[in-house]
Length: 296
Image 1: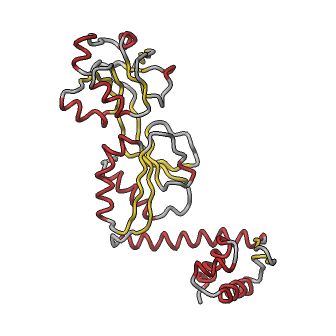
Image 2 (image 1 turned 120 degrees about the vertical axis):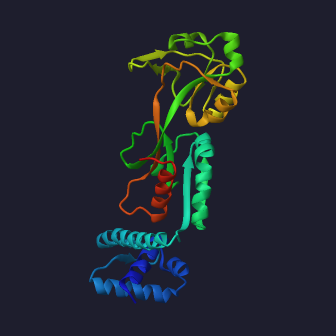
């Protein structure tokens, strides 16, 4: 029996908290698991666990060995997955969290293509505009739009998104078309609630000079699709990312205003916890999205 088998046996005992539970997981007898554990300790010349009638607990050496056993297992799995990836045979579970509209508009078709290329991958996609802690371990990948401020995370850029001020032709016919950012203060502005009202909207002229305007409006929402539909209905001016506006602009449901000014450019990132041994399936998904979105 190889050292890797002994290590897997040891990790199972620690993870399950008992030899009996580990035996069930490994589909071995309790005696076999106990024998492997004793043989491992004999080979290493140290006690890894202290045992009593109620529980098992790690010794100092056991803590050290357990952490390294997990790293070895992850590295072996990563190598196996990489070899499978080279043959197009990735497998396992993947969980991705992404903003509602961006996920629908930009990623849905790409994720379907990824799954078609890797039929043994099982993907759970959660669409949510609320903030998600990418370090929690609940997801393998979290898609974020905007500024990142968590140094514990690895962030890989997918693409840029450009905010555009837009309104329905009917609204502009009734209320007039603003010619300068300052005039937005006199209009109904549809506000995205994940950004503070106090920050207002900032538009830049060709010289890069910032024009900040405090906005007001009848409707606020934490979802861009809601704001887009309200703008189409003629309820006011919206400042939304370009990926959300393509169809409405093409159909003439919305028109861009203040074309001599530009709003903030925001970046879209694939974010995941920083760790030494990234699963190959996670790496493959992120690499695929970057390639498909044609990010240099």
